Figure 1: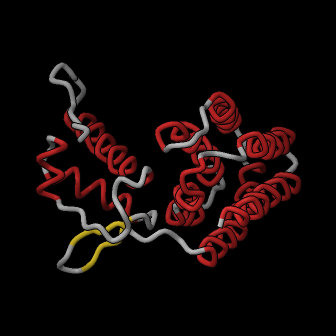
Figure 2: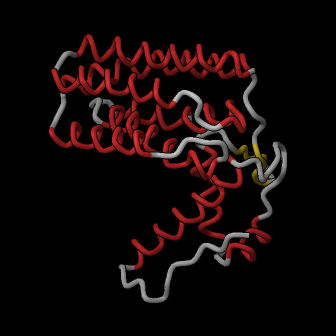
Length: 230
C-alpha cells in the first residue's frame, strides 16, 4: 500500500499543506481505480484506507467527493462509496456526444477570449503530451492523461462560461476514456498530439471557427478509434 504523507519539514501554511494532503490522497485513489487495483463494485472502507494511507479519514472523504464528480466512484446512502462499473460502449458513445456539444463551443469561445496565459498553458501541456510515456499501465500513461486532460480543461476554463467549465469537470471524460481503453495503454498518442496541435494552431491564429472544427474532429476521431477496442 502507498502511504500518503506531508513531510514534517513542509512549512507551507495550514490550508496549503491540507490541500497538498488531499491532492496526494486523490492521486493515490485514482491510481487504484485506473490501474484496476480496485474492481468495479468494491466498497471504499474509509477506516482501512485511513490506516494504510496514514492519513485521517477527512482527506479521504474529500478526495472521494472529488472523484465522485467524475463518475469513477458512486456514493450510496448509508453505505458509502463504491467503485463505479466501467462504461459500456453505448455509455461511452453518449459521453463523447456530450463532449461534442460542449467542447467545440468552448474552443471557439476560448479562442475569441484568448490570452497569452492560455496560449502558454496550452503549449506547455502539448509539450508534456509529446514527451510523456504512453503504455501499457496507468503509471506509464498517467503523465499523458494528465496533460491531455489539462489541455482540454484550460480551454473550458477560458471559455468565459463557468457552467461549461463545470460541465466539463462533471463529465470526467478523460478518466473514462482511458478506463474504456483498458490495459492497452495509449495507442493513439501520435494522432492525439496532431489533433491537439490543430486546435492550438487555430486558437493562436484567432480563428474561432477553425478551433471549433478542430476540436470537433478530435473528439469524433477519439470515438472512432475507441470502437475497435470493444
